[in-house]
Length: 244
Image 1 (tube, rainbow, N blue to C red):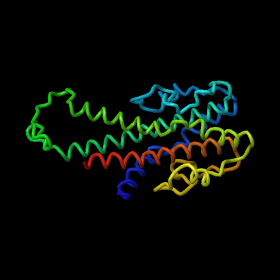
Image 2 (cartoon, rainbow, N blue to C red):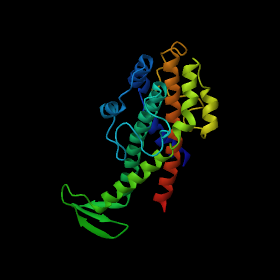
Image 3 (cartoon, helix red, strand yellow):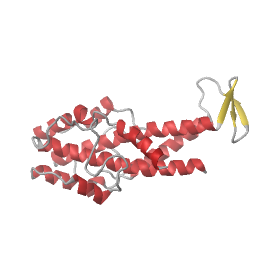
């Protein structure tokens, strides 16, 4: 099971390839200029449409409802990059789950002369081109259920984590990411505490020269790995369910 989980977690992480080079500067620029970041437009430009939530938010308590957006640009932009990272993670997980569900579906069916025979139900159906089958509807419903599980694991994220990284920016310091990860999540199957793949972070950039950018990437790394921890738990549930 662990090797299978590693295979899919590697695929999850590959979905973030180039993140620092392609995205961190956009958030850093707004933070340095103390300008509002238009997350809605940014999501539309860089991500597929989320199957559950509108651009710019995850409406299940990820943001702290007690916080008035716009009152603190530093916190707003930190949460914006966290939401964007979660949505990208959701996109990666959706793609993985679609693959798993498709493979499971193919394993339970055989196709001969345009007639699909369902081995489990012993039924045969001729599918008209463009038609949506009950099975496809059920898989979409199942996919939505799993993606909601993924997002729900971030409930309370702003309340529990934002200040630690916002304070580090204000104090021109950095969170000890290795210790922080060890406190809030299980050990990652792919990367050690505080570490992230070279294709995701820009290894050529020297750390310490730009503390704002460093902290944004630290916060992103924590978010990506927290999402990986959730993805691992979700995959275990999916595999257990499919085996029943």
